[in-house]
Figure 1: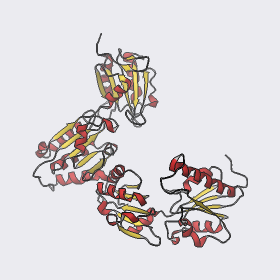
Figure 2: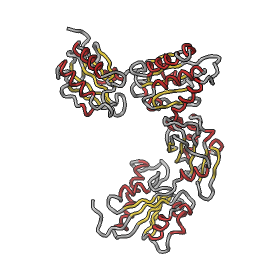
Figure 3: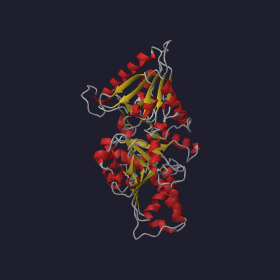
Amino acid sequence: MSSPTSAGRFYGVGIGPGDPELITLKGARLIRDADVIAYHAGVGKQSMARGIAADLIPEGVIEEELRYPVTTGFTDHPRGYYGALADFYDECSERLEAHLSQGRTVVVLAVGDPLFFGSFMYVHDRLSPRYPTEVVPGITSLSAATAAVATGLCRHEDTLTVLPGTLPVPELARRLADTDAAIIMKLGRTFTGVREALRQAGVLDRAVYVERASGAGEVVMPAAEVDEGRVPYMSLVVVPGEGLRDDAAGRAADFARITAAADEGEVAPPSSMGTVHVVGLGPGPERWLTPEASEVLASVDHVVGYAPYVARVPQREGLTRHSSGNTVELDRGRLALDLARGGEDVAIVSGGDAGVFGMATALFESREAALSDDAGYADVPVRVVPGVTAAHAASALVGAVLGGDHALVNLSDNLKPWEVLADRLTALVTNDISIALYNPRSASRPDTLGQARDLLVAAAGAERVVVVARHVGREQESVVVTTLGELDVESVDMGCLVVIGASTTRVTDDGRVWTPRSVG
């Protein structure tokens, strides 16, 4: 939509967290020169934004107070809390547009920064496509609170996570445990749950509560000592990083420190060793986690793994998490062995079944390598806990495409050359064995699946049934039943599992796919 010919200019001006002296020079100039000053206000409250900028607002300027209809999650609006707010932002936009259409300059005052958890965002979404718009950044409450705490928030490659206190306690605890430093916003009535999440994540002792950062009545105190009944919305919690991690893997720096200590003989032999449990989490939904796996995860002292898998483990008091990237499997194994050797019980987690292209093999490889340095690793107990495999979950999704003889093949050529893959695929398909392809296609290997398809078409024909299952068991789950000749390689990614049926595989009228057990 084009802008009106006489359109005024629309500004979102960040005015900082509370101290008027933290308003930028540009923001101050725009406020003084505006035709219209707009600001939000809570139910029954004076506008904090107007109070901060009061000395800059010129006499005679048009003021638009945008007062919220509700400030909590409780409302009788037919579409609930967010429906009430959507209607409110529509009304705000209409009021401001009445001025913009007359060619007036409209400045919306935003506490902190306009686009950081700010109400300005919602009128910006509605008006910026139609009117010349500019956003002037402001100092955030995050920055002011960090300054008030006067402790380094992040050092080196620490990861900072900004979290809303409205998250459920288990999810908030998990995210706190998976980061180095954190800011928790949106407190008020959520503070009881926030403090419990801090405790479960093991960071309550270093969490600092900051109220009205930089403003009059600023409060800074340990989060553990705060009176839960007096926490206002305009407060947050700062969890500084420990300042100990110094490599690009963040929490994976634990690997280097613990294994280096072991190599240098700094780890004293424990009175008893812990156990390394290699746990398969299944391919996705919590309901596919086995009771045995749940029991292990509820009892161990540490959980180690690729970050998305560690993220699936609920945080609880006493659990230490060690997340890392996707290419350091042997380092993960060594870390787990060292922790167990020090008397800790450890779970290494994998998606699906840990013994199928998972961490079980990587752990045994790590153990073998460690034994070449120190025979003591032979005494570390290792237990593998099975899980639902992605291949068999995908087979169940369509029926029983792997109901007969079948093979599971990792299509990645990172650990084996293409020639080996090609020979194995040809041998399997010519012997009429169904094949489930793991890791079928990635950004670094865009052509492997296409090469495999062409190879299989040449060996077995284009009519073999193919099932492409994506995100099995998750909300985004989808499945496509096709043939080798019609397989759309470009639609496949690492979230998929590709199953090539046998010559006997059948597709029923209602779309079920199954392979008979009998041959001939």
